[in-house]
Amino acid sequence: MGPRRSEKASRSALERTRLFEDLLRQHEDQIYRLAYRLTGNRDDAQDLIQDSVIDALVSFDRFCIGSRFDRWMQRIITNNFIDRHRARSKVKVESLDQPTGSEGEDERTLEVADVTTDPPQILEQRALDEPVQRALDELQAEYRAVVVLSDIEGYSYQEIATMLRVPIGTVRSRLNRGRNILREKLADYARQRYRR
Amino acid sequence: MRFRPCDWVGEHLSAYLDEALSGREMRQVAAHLITCHACRGALDDLRATKQALQGAEMPRPAPDFWPEVYAQVRQKSVSLPAPGISRSTWRAQLAGVWTVPRALATAAAMAAMLLLSILTRPTAPPASAPDDLGEFIAQHAQHSTAYPLSDWSRMMFIGSEANAPATVPVADESGNAP
Image 1 (tube, rainbow over the protein chains, first blue to last red):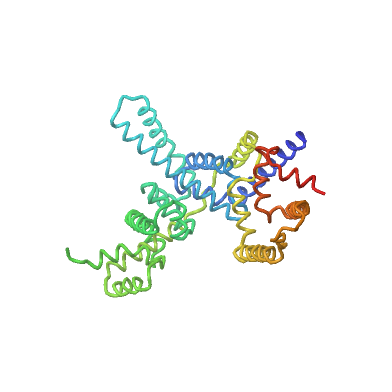
Image 2: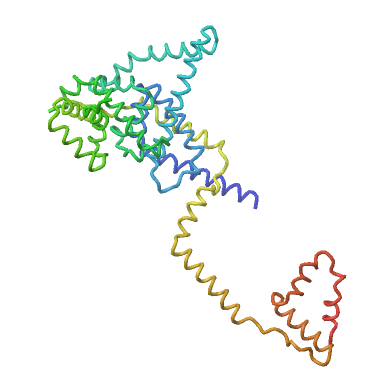
């Protein structure tokens, strides 16, 4: 009974991995696009995806098969992104309080590293994307998430509210604020290309 | 403070663009846009911004990125416990099985069975004791053995059996009765 049972268990573990991989493969593009638009660069996007994929795999038993995997995955990515930003901005405040602390220094070198990784990323991007992404990067994480989910990923207000666990009115006001900031930053660019 | 229509419209322009306002609000914004050149310009800019976001190209990861991710997935899944039926999956499965009509049908069937069992339950043993005390005990014993749930004293006996089986003489007597 014992060996047969463990055989069965390992087979179902294999099936689980297989299913997870297949679902992931089907949605690679959307997953990468979301992570990239949120983080604004390739390295951070890839980090965010790697962490989120492992989170998703660990809780895959709780995923209701038959519901939308892409939406589930995007929810994990978005919430991880917002959590990271909150943690980062917290550390930043602490480092101001304790400028000699070793943790603060680590964080500062991290920030510097982010800046130095910028030039190759700008090269790798197409000219069309550059101003849009730069404008997005300047938005606060909460505003950015709502704008990206709505305008790039096509989520409804209600879906975003559920995903971020905030009231629908908050989604509406964050979207309004985020879009208006982008409008100011992208005015010339967007007018030239899209305004008739 | 004076109400400034441009401020109010400015707060609702983004939702107007998505048609995510109530019908009344949609009409109010539209009415304002007919007369206000500045707000109309802002709306056009917002629309162009939204289109710029939508028109942004699909970014591509490094070519070896996804293969690396799948390698990590396989590595990690080795250390995970074997999949079992988790609570939420159970719930989902139950939710699939227990639709409201099904639950109602089951409840109705159970009520019908209960009613049937009440209507067809065996009659109680004769109220007046037969002349022969031995026969009475025998009848009682037969009846309560056949229908243990209909006899309160038998129920009590069953309940007490575990604690003190030997101290209940009725059972012994009925068992030995002719």
